[in-house]
Amino acid sequence: MSTVQATGSHVDPRVPVLPDGLALKYVAEGAANVIWRISLPDEQLTPPPTVIEEYSETTPPPSDIDIDLDIGKENGTVTANGANAPIITDYSHLLLRLRKCLPSSESNLLAYEYLSSVIMPLFPPGVMVGQELVKLPPALVVRANDTLHHLERSGVRPSHRQQLYLAGDPRPTEQQMDEGYAFLLEDMTPDTSVGEFLLEFKAKWLVQSPSAPENWNRCRTCALRLRKYNKAIKKGKHAEWRGLCPFDLVSKDPKRAKNAVRRILQHPRSEDEKLVERVTTALMNSPQLSILKELQASLDPKGILKADHKSKEFLTAMTLRDCTFYVKVSPTEVQARLGDFDVKSGEAGKSEYWIRNEHELIGEGWYTGTEYGDHPWKAEGLEVVCRV
Ligand SMILES: [Zn+2]
Image (cartoon, rainbow, N blue to C red; front, top):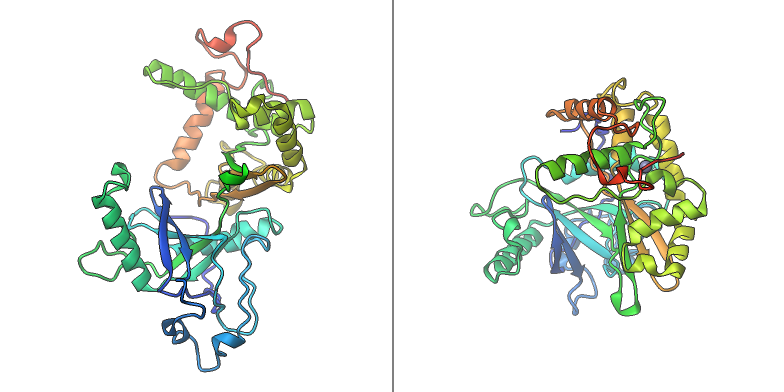
């Protein structure tokens, strides 16, 4: 549960209702959600009667409703005129995210209230991946769960995801968990047929941890990565000690920023100098990095060891240190969006974990580069040193 208080306000009565006749196509799933591509059935040029019934008597007929839902360009804002609740007729650039019956997950309504009251106000339009709350007809969840069962039987659903289905299915035979809402997301899927691809990365800590010792040589992200490497190899696991330094990304030095972008692009794309140049220029000119950097600094000036772990500001800073960049690269354009804003809470041992991590990074010399052990970066010329 979040300690960031949801607004407690009621959801805008204009929250759109999804028609239950939508065609659904399974795209992917994570631990807590399943992503679907959706479309109106071919013959359905106007919303089905089930949707019309959802509206009040004052609702104009569909032909009078301005059906323009614009997610993404307006930072997730629904724009619709002339109706209490807008109807969406074009789903071609949207994906539907349905929540699974995972007891530890937050309801979509609470997740949206957190996003709309805490996170969205921090960013101007077009910076975040567009997302909007929609009301969910139970019949749609029933069909989606039937599809999951079918995919499971035919061996298409990943084995480690099986046996967990979607919340909001009213059938007594299904796992029971209430969920009346879903998210419509701006579709960042690249069109590979025209040479597009998607980069995903976390920029992590763009300013130094206020708890780092004054004589630090490494940023929080690089210090933590090296310590994780050290722990992994002790357990005989594979780990990577080379990685993206967030300070390079925000250094305003094109050479350093390019080094960071090469890490993001990875081999063989990182060998394409023109591509490196193009993505570097786009990221350096994008508003995301500078906004995130500024917010991380202003929301957590004290750092993990001194901050109030119940404060909304500190927890928001932790969320912003863990959000994800989605960068769609096409032959002519580079489009960056931020997403994956998970509510952070110091509960369930998380607060103790953050503090323990920070003490270890300081005490074992990971910030200062004085850690004990014979590590690959100790070889001449490979030392990991970060600069602001
Ligand atoms: Zn670094």
